[in-house]
Image (cartoon, rainbow, N blue to C red; front, top):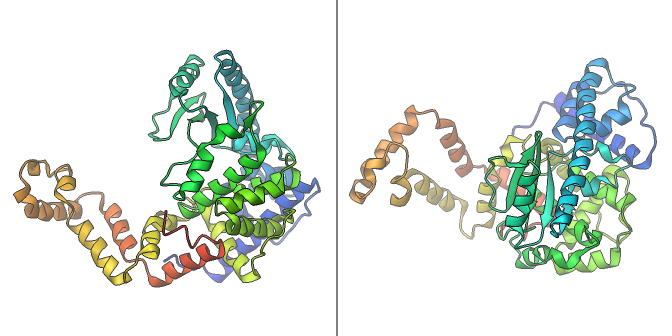
Length: 411
C-alpha cells in the first residue's frame, strides 16, 4: 500500500496539479496564464516533467517561472521543438518512400494528434507509431532499413521497433492484442483499421476511439497520465469535425460508453472542455480520487512505483475465491515452481532430466535467493502476494469510478 504523503507535501502536489491543468486549459484557449507566487516550484517541475508536458508549460509560464524552474523546463522545451522538427522531416521522407513502394502508411497517436494542438511542435513523444497494412511487414521493414533505420533491439511481439538519429519508431500491423484488449469486440474492431482509412489517414472518429481505448489499456496496466487526457481534450475542442453521433454508437457497441463518459467528465473538470454529448459526470469525490491517482502516475504510470503491482491487484479483484486462499496458492506457486521452470533456473541446470531432484532444487533455489542480488525482485513478488485489503479496495473503487469494473476480470 502506498503511504500517504505528509500533509504539506500533499497540499503542494495538489496545488501543482491544479495549476498545471489550469495552464493547459489556457493553452487550449490561446490565452495567457496568470502568474502565481505561492507554488512549490520544485514539486511543480517534477510533476510537469513526469507527465512530459514541459514544452507546453514553458510556453505558457516561462515568463514568470523562477530561475531554477525556468532553466529546467527551457531545456526540455528546446529539445521537444528540435525532436518534433526532425520527426516531421523523418515522416515526410518515410511517407515518400512508402508511396514509391506502393505501401499504405498511416500515422497514429502522437504526430497525428499534434496537428490539433494549438502549437503542434509542443507535443512531446518518446517514439512515433506508424501503421501499415497487414501482410506488408517484410516489405515495410525493408523500406525502413533502406532509409537507414535499424532495429533498436527492443523486443516487441506486435511491432518492429527501430531508430535513426536517436529517434525511435514503431511499425505496427496490428492495433490491438487480445491480452491487451480482452473484449473480442474491441480487438476485432481495432484490428480492422483498414476499413477506416481514406486518403492516407485513419478516419478520425475511429482514431479518437482508438485513443480512448488505448488510454483505457494504460489505465488498467501500468497507469496513465495527464497528457493522454490532454490529447483527447485537444481533439474535442479543436479537432477534425468529429461525428459525435457515430462515436456514441461505436463506444456503445464496444462497451466503452461508461469509460468514455468518465474521461469526458475529467476532461471537463480539468481543462474546461466539454464533449458535445450527454454524459454522466463524476462526483467531486470521484474526480478527486482519480485526480490523485493520475497525479502520481506520470505519463505512463512509471512515476508511481506501486503500479508495478497492478497485475497482482487484478488477480485478486477477479478471483472467485477468498483472498486468503489465493494468497496461499500464489505463495505456493512462487515458493515451489514447476519442474519445467526449475530446470532452466540459473544454478539449477543439474535438474534437467532428473525430475526426482526437484525438492533439492527448491531448497537450493532458496539459498541462491538469499545470497544473490535479485532479492529485491523476490521481495516485490512477496509484496504482490500480500497486498493489503485496503489497497485492493482502493483499486477496485478507482475501476468502478472509471466504469472498468467489468474489465479487470478479463484483463
